[in-house]
Image (cartoon, rainbow, N blue to C red; front, side, top):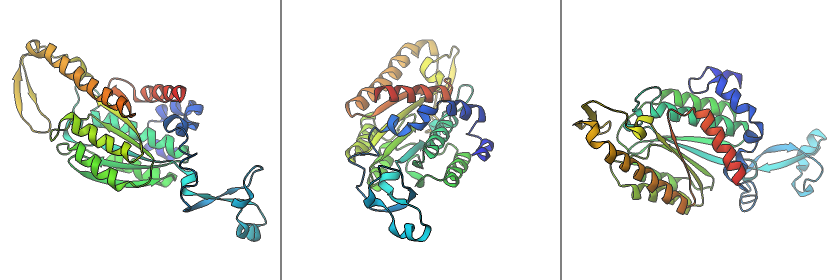
Length: 302
């Protein structure tokens, strides 16, 4: 996978650091969805996938006798449900994700997260797909697990740019109906939806749970959105509506900080109630550090 080092959102140093966490990378499935390769998923489907060599302890009923006759070697037939976790990375590309106070925009930071997760999953031989959305689903790349597929995902991440307003709830409902097989849904978003209140966004997330998917939400903030470091009279511009408002920060700071904390708490509480993993992060936290810390925590919990 050395060729991937040339992609913008795969940093060699960060990938190397993630690679050192071999137990974490090797157990992404256990860390994300314990038992997803076992019951109730194991054996659900009979869609043929590929072969692997026989090892002592394998069920003789799974031997491919045709392959034995052709090659004089023992091979086990593997099926799609048994070989791969199917994961979908849902990346919010709405205009609000283009915000930055300094450093990376929320979208750039999220793209690094998406690229790292895709890399880890393909390395794990699990299938990963990419969905981008704003008011609707803009890109849908079905999950696969090959290096060439990873290249396709990384190419797509290179092309993304902030676009329109967000309609998160609608996009989630549409996707939940589209994805039939149970798997892992990874949402990377600031969860700002101008068309709906927070409860509608939560309903969209709940739709995935209703369909028996495991759901992880990376709630991405810019550090300035959490700290509100502004001091002087300033014009604040809504990135999705372009509405402009002149504000003296010292008169609104306390109220704003209370509102942003309530915003986070509401999603955290709702996700906890619905057994959805909620992971708040901000663009000042190195994404590789945040990701390895999270994976380590998931591994301990599971």
